Image (cartoon, rainbow, N blue to C red):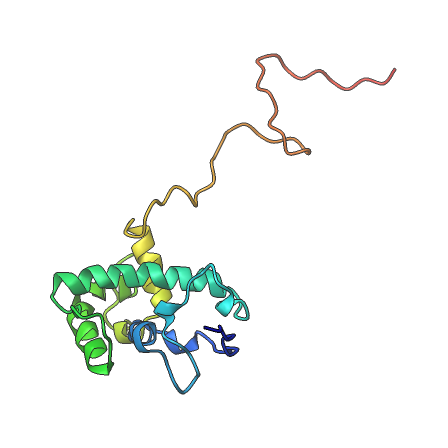
Amino acid sequence: MRRTALPSLTFSLNAARNMHGLISTWFIGDKDTNTPPLRLLHANNNFVAHIPNGKKNISKMGSVMHQVMLLGRSVSAWPTDGRWDGSKVETLYSKVFSRLLPYLSTEGKRGDKSKAKSRPQEASWRTCYNKMWKKGLLGDRTRKAKAKTDAPKDGKGKKRKKTDAPAKPHQKK
């Protein structure tokens, strides 16, 4: 059997701007923008290399969709046969939307929920990702945090040794 090369795919991730768009594009793609189902793409292949931050975004989308899968299974909205169509996507979205709501609503400057300004149906999937990440739902939060030390670094990037003796003044000979 002879393998043929895949046709070149040029598409954008713009179809997945909000959560509904992400869920829909993740499972069934978008024919208008020539976007394949995003669940078939992975951050370690080159199908998203032409998109700025494509690998990072596909990885983040996968993290959010893993949480959607867990929510969908908890409310019995995940199909057992693994086949997706428009009606199954709509059923999944309508059943998990109420559970995604805390991650989609905006907050005011004082930290309170803003009901007047919030349009959770139009919230970006990135908002959902950021809030899930802050709550610790997307894995280990410490691996992205840089280690903090109180020892200053010198100009060469090495840590200076802490000593109790005061520094000697620089003298010319």
